[in-house]
Image 1 (spheres, rainbow, N blue to C red):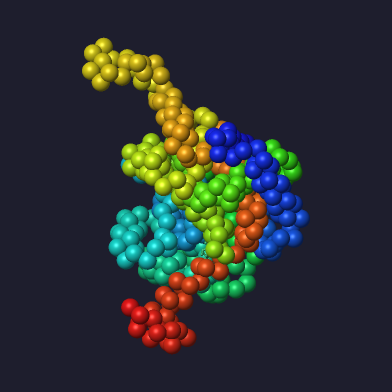
Image 2 (image 1 turned 180 degrees about the vertical axis):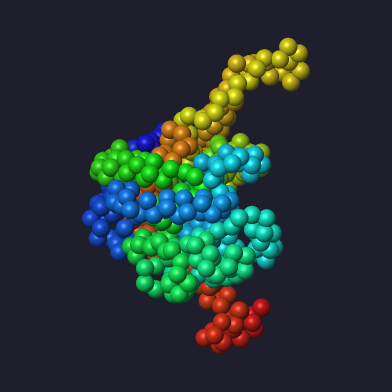
Length: 445
Ligand code: PA5
């Protein structure tokens, strides 16, 4: 289960201020639970952990088994934003740090594409595909997003050329809207297996739909355990209370932002496997709250590495930030620092201690130093990095995001601002229909 500790905010938020924002967060909880707030047609994510049918999980596992039969050892997962970050986060968190170098037999390697427009990236991806037995999952809820569409055209043509058109239909799976979009039309025409992104689930809330579940299952991880972990969290967070960790998180961050001007939240991790958890979280909170001229800017650091790059700023720079520190209660592996007869490195005072003990002391020491430096500290903790805990963490941050955005007074479930760059890009690419805008923009360049 996910727990929250806000004692690192006590020097900054007094009891009266906290009560005020707790009340606001509890009202926002009611708005979320009543399903009457702004964007309430996008609340399908709330019941995914308990309502995902067995048949859907079995379908994901069937693709995994089918591709195993074909000897697939490389899956290219194409998608951007919410159609990529959840799966990337889970796969990075659950994989061995050196799985690529170890070349152990097992599940195929899942790599991601369609999340950039770098020509070098795509060319080098094709170098990799040429050496491997390749299949592809293409993910786009709208089915019209340019970055994944460009990547998919290239990967599709490669797969058809390499394995033949008939087998391509077996090696390509699409995840998209049930009825509309170019990807839907194309998938029907080409006879691809398709999974549906439910209408009422927005991209950044879709990790527990096939958008996340299929790539995670293909990478060899247990999506049933992930859904079970999320379901336990769903049950725990459904209780309206001042101790509900999602309510506490929403109340605290809104008090820090609105009353104390802390405009930047840094998600801090002490395990490199959690780097993409921060990327997923940044999209979730950035896209849900950053609108109407409001919102906390979500940033992240990976410690202890970033203590040696960003640590100076966080300790002594402009006091605009607070930190939410991820605390994983149990390391999966054990490495003990042994005594050394010569002690030339002077480390014998650590003899017999686990490296994780040093990591925890670094975390606690940093928390205290940053409090002294004027940076409020929240702690979000969970048991370990496994499927079940990750499911719980996904659900916790999603549910808290809904409460927090309603506390802030914005619609958590739209993203109107994402369109502006797309219109300009289409105009500059001379997409039919954008001719007028094209000449206006070119005149400005
Ligand atoms: O959260 C969101 O809605 C967005 O980040 C989308 O996931 C992202 O823009 C990709 O969209 P699509 O899945 O339609 O290609």
